[in-house]
Length: 480
Image 1 (cartoon, rainbow, N blue to C red):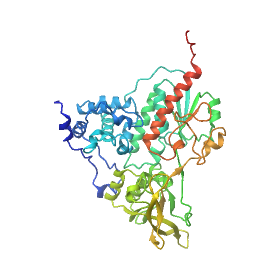
Image 2: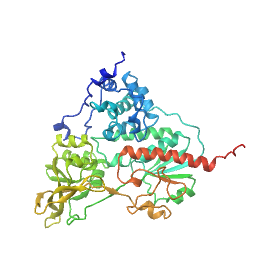
Image 3: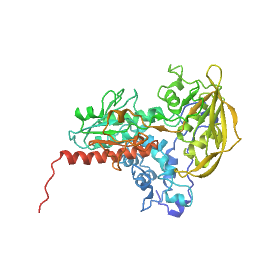
Image 4: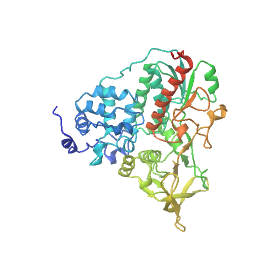
């Protein structure tokens, strides 16, 4: 292939991702984005300027060698590109779908300074899918077993990433999951149309083939405590339980029938496969031909409102107290929601829910907002406008304003320090106040992104390795 100059590369436009038609996809749960063809992938990869100073790697929490894998895509070596990614990320099919690349690796892409950045996430997804479809499982090289055992609590992105690194280092790794299916938020929180369950299961199955042991229906803090794990043969523990305790607004009427947390709503639909009723006889919140309001402006809110639309809601509303500019959701998710017919009620917030004589939700009292000075998050604070209240007819409300930490671990591990929100206190390496116990992901930071949790998992794996080597391997005295 003839090598292009940087000037010629800059003339190649960013390649669009093929996707389902909005008016068809808003009635089904098939994946919205259809992925690049080989031809599109190669053309997009050719846009990479192959910078010597690789800012894109600095923007990636798991430090994927982005330039190197994209160079391989450009010359058609898709399997080589997959191998290169997996040197740093064993879950590329997941990350390529749900990570906010536009805020991380792509935002610092040099190509993006004079045009659109290289579509790094879409290329990552392409090579992961290409390997899965054409080759299947490719076992990573593992170091010989060192006989040391590590317990990982939680099978979400932080736990899976940590398990993948540790198994390659030669450790015996056991992942304990409280639910009956593996994947954490990847399986119960993210809808099928954005992240197919088969993709998650495939990636987890690959870890199992590498030697990671998975134990489901195991609620650490009840089934076993951390101290019991450490007493029963485990040399270290990594806590990656995420942030699964839903927040509510504490306004009148939140106890009415029809007011749900996003966690409950999405778990029923995703994990219990209620969207495939009656094939799966799972309980579901009936929203067909009803008015559904989702409170919040993050990715979880977009997932919930787009799910409601697919389940047949008459009207699907997003109610968000700030402007669209302040929305933490990915731009792509907001764009897709609008295309699918979601109604955005911006600079508004509920102050009360109104019920009928039987305790069922029938309306929300809404107040309009204006933006004031920035708050601690850096976003402008919403200020209520007096006299702007009105009533909105709704039958179902899904509250998606964030989550906190489950207290089971902290309640049963008194020497594990937590902050006032219940998040485990850990330093930059992942080490906690308790020897041999490490933590990372949302249980430490609060609700964040999949890729940041994976970065924390990789970081903790490195720290655990260093800790156990120092503890168990003979230390040689320096020679004078």
